[in-house]
Image (cartoon, rainbow, N blue to C red; front, top):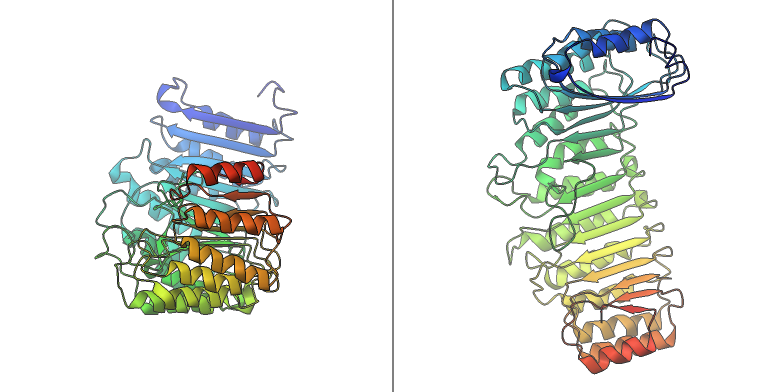
Length: 484
């Protein structure tokens, strides 16, 4: 780099494992290259520091170089840093100058690959101090999903620093906290503390659009297609709902909320009616207009819970909000759990049929294995609510594991015969207890071409459909029906 090798370089991505670096001066050399103008065109810098026994001085030098504008063209800096004295030193360096490149944005990811328990607290405290003092106004992403520390006081202080009036984090777009530890009795206490800290701050985060738990590429890990680690109970999220309602967060795009008792240890987090009420209030706030994707789960709700239909009614009020006109996806998981029954089905349909979800393109309702008699009722009321007049842009409809039954499917298609159905492209009826009668109902509906845009119908795991009817569907609709 010092021999004009970096004079035309625009992107530089390096992983530093300094435990095996006998020179121990890698980061310092890079900082020197900045100072001497040897990387004049560099726009994107990504550095991963795995281990650095040589000392934290190099992190200071790098932070200072970034904060003093010694690399003017930089637009994106990605730093993957250990939760130890190197992070503290990086913050020290970032606090030196006040003239970073004007277009520079920082994605900071913290990991524990080489961190020691004794160093974690001071490192977090130093990062919190730097954020609160306003020395990292160019922070765009803060990723702590690989840290797994559980001190609620530390996280609460950090959350409060993010919304402190002096932090000036107008560019912060994404926050990720540690994944829920498997079989942890502590559950979401740190997450709630972090959000409570954010609520206490007097400032806002105008660009924040994503708050998640766990890494961005986290895979789904259960039958119903929703990762348990992404769900955060309404009890834990209640401070965040306050942030939305008060206008401190106005650009949020996606929400994953569990409104049943939260987590496998339900004695730790139990979502109460006031928590769901706060959720509904946030959905009714004018500050929620940026929301594009909404997922609600009733997982872990006990059977015959009298509060479950009430929770769904509150959620339905939120769905009818005039401020959700740009919402594109709604997913409801474990719908049948908690004794949802008739009242819950009607409440959900009322929200969906309010006419306010004019941009909704994808609707997914998945049962939880305990239908409690609500499957056919749900099909009937959806036939009245899921129509083109009320959901003009709906293209994908999934009704899975709801126990709709043959009668429910007939109610749905009959309703669509009376009112114009949405212009669906995909209809998923997986695992609904359909038999030959249901297959005949579906075949008649498809032959009517009531939905000419339909290009895929899934019938997987409807074991009551016999071989003869399956063959008929394959013959008559070879490019349309799947899963038979």
